[in-house]
Length: 314
Image (cartoon, rainbow, N blue to C red; front, side, top):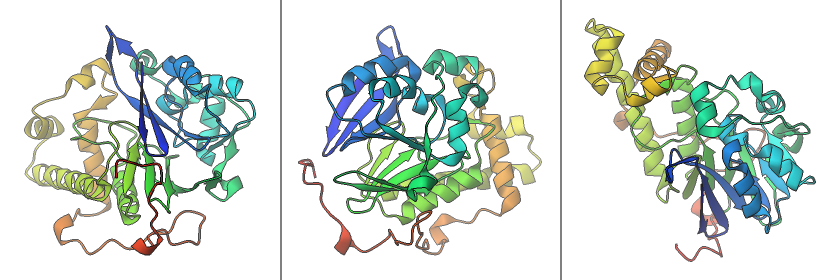
């Protein structure tokens, strides 16, 4: 199942396996000016290739090597053999040998299994910069959801393609490999860029991204504080899960524990062990960040902002 929406110069492509005609979980890819950001899962790859057949695909950029973001690469390489594929250096071994990802059975059912693709170039080889005739996107290191994760930022239009560095909604279950310290640090990095449009790896496009990013940071920090408070009071992990989440969510059962509230509690413990979470309301202003591999300060003033000429919805 594929859903397509045009947001100015950006074509938003949402993909999901369907069950009885209903989507199970949407993931997103984005096309702009001959560049495709992420490819969705293997189960929707044939539909994606058909959709893109009438468009130029000269470059493909990957945010991270999870199966719902690289699953379409094999068929896309066959359809667009001259397209350059770029990915973080840590992602490339997983793209070449997807069996190294360690895909659980429920993920295989949900997304399918990617086929290996060779000839992927590291973002290092292009100085963490992807250039199209109209746009320049910079890679921003955003680990936490995965170690190899990057986001892409277009500084003129202040567009942020965040992959899974930002996932909307309330967190009730995490995988054990997620790193809360990394997630919060990456969200702060993204907020410091002051994006004006956020294109996430799943969910809807955000037109007020800075408040959304700060809201997510606040919610995660407060959750870590709650875990710290309950743990100091002698609560066990099951008791904390019951207090904060009213028990494990349904995803815990059908993922056989890969996603669980208990994992999220443990992530909060690891975060608390690194530092004592502070109240974000009283936190000092976020420092300006520079992008990986770039000397340009992309938190520049509004004097450098551009309006998307194709965006009639602004």
